[in-house]
Length: 172
Image 1 (tube, one colour):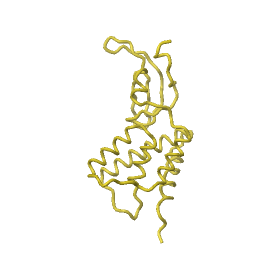
Image 2: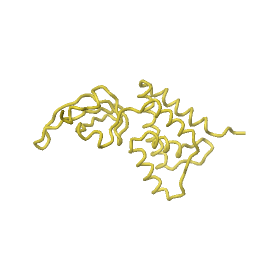
Image 3: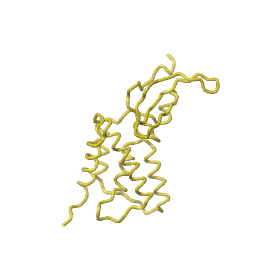
Image 4: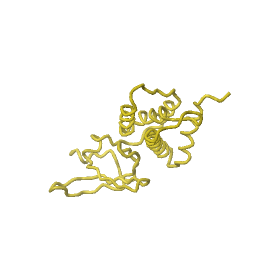
């Protein structure tokens, strides 16, 4: 049995691509690239108006994975409830680490970024780059929570927001 026939991903299935988040496999197609026949997953990222072609034999090597299980979603929500862990390192170093976590495709790591960069209204302003990273992580997390729950991003955003707000200490 050849390796390419053992596809763990199917058309219409939602998958997580580390650098872009949740996408949907539209089809699997054959294409000749540089004289080599390749089998490719065609993945659509609706929100970003982007289509990606990923060689089927490389998909798992680059970290493409199925959507998280409900258990992992629960772990991510528990992570969000935790206390922010902000290292005392310089921002450029922290920003790099956050970026790596976001692009790892690991939902728990992404939840850590959301937790660590979340600000309540009475906390100091976020810098532009902090806000960019926070929003990127939040969007990844929300889209996956939505996809696992059946696609309602508004409900997923509210679920994530409720968890973040619930951990904020009540004002006296």
